[in-house]
Amino acid sequence: MDTATTRAVGIGQELPSLAKQPTQRRIDAYSTVRAHSIHSDEAWAQAKGFRTCLAQGMMSTAYVSEMMTRFLGAGFVKGGSMSIAFVKPVYAGDRLTVRGVVKDKREEDGRTRVVVEVTCTNQHGQQTAIGTASGFLP
Image 1 (cartoon, rainbow, N blue to C red):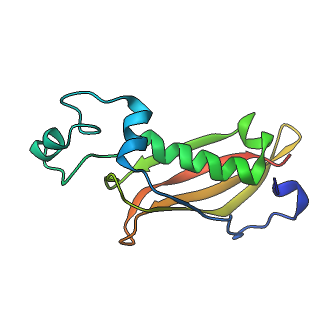
Image 2 (image 1 turned 90 degrees about the horizontal axis):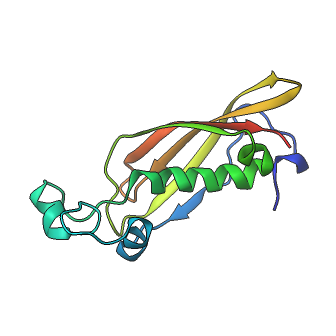
């Protein structure tokens, strides 16, 4: 794994992006199949005004966590934080791109915390989740 320890981290630096596709099968596995669920019951989701089943918001946070762990390794796992807002639904079959840009570095308890602005964007260019994630340089 090529974490931030092997290179300098600068403000404005882009993290390697991730491409993810939350298929219906993955959505079902994430929270189990249930009747009357916007995540696994297409008729129910459509009755609630959605075009098809929705991916759980926590799937997007898991994707952000994966990106941050690849970037900071244990510095995210053992000291990371996230604040994410879900701004558009993610539907089964969408293609998401998870991106991050370093916005701040600061000393905290003798370590360097890196703050990253994060986004999830669907195949139509619409942001579905926005926020920040941070962790320590290893």
